[in-house]
Image 1: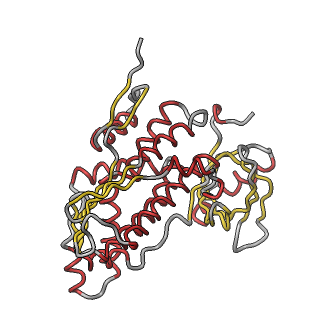
Image 2: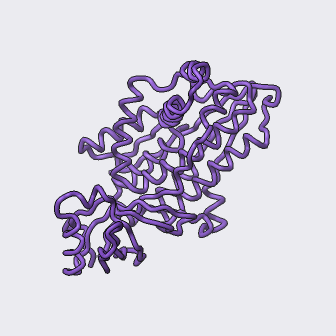
Image 3: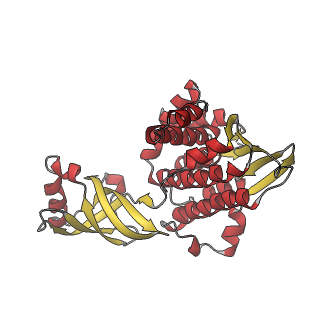
Length: 338
């Protein structure tokens, strides 16, 4: 009997599959992509006649760089692109097609999605692999999530700007529809539960910042229906804070040492049971205020019992510089290490 296969060719299909998965439905055994995802940009101006300027190329180079980091994270558990082989880099390379009519750019990232699905074999179930790859397609090539980025930057800048004139200009930018807003809420909640996707979303955010910044050189940029003029692109990316310097490193850890001698900081030394990575973490103040959490960490140390920790870390190419524990929970029976 032939195995079931589904061809995903639209963003609407991708979101429907995610909703099906979240409501307990089984996904098809095989999913492939046909013409999606492929972000489309139209740039207008004297320098954009079926051509790219170095500044615009810089935006796409940043996207490639962040995709490489995302794959390194999936492969090695750390977003260090230096660990990728020459073959990895070649297979991950995005394709940017420049068409006639001002400069119409289409970004094809099927190579990344194919390689990601292959890398996750043995690390996740078949259903988890499929939903992760579909979500990655939406994060990097989805129109709605790009519009969410623009909407986020718009709201941040409106809060920062004092000049009424600047506010009025920024307010003219139209982004998400009501339907897209609902989809994004579902997707955002799902990503928070999946550290790999949450980290990818941070990386993609920084890539989008660099891309929109590069559109300042164009008189007008149309990003899948959202129109930005040069002034708006500049305004949106002003003071844009990089998000990919932080990452989620949730996992199963053993508590090796609890240090509560400092009244200003509760610290624990932990070891990841899968990777053997050792970290010294601060524990979030709000978390400590909750009844029993401090005792739970101390008990896990005394009993030498593994626990599931949610950890937010700051890093440079995967090298952890600081880490903070957000919450702790018991390890499920199927998660327990050997």
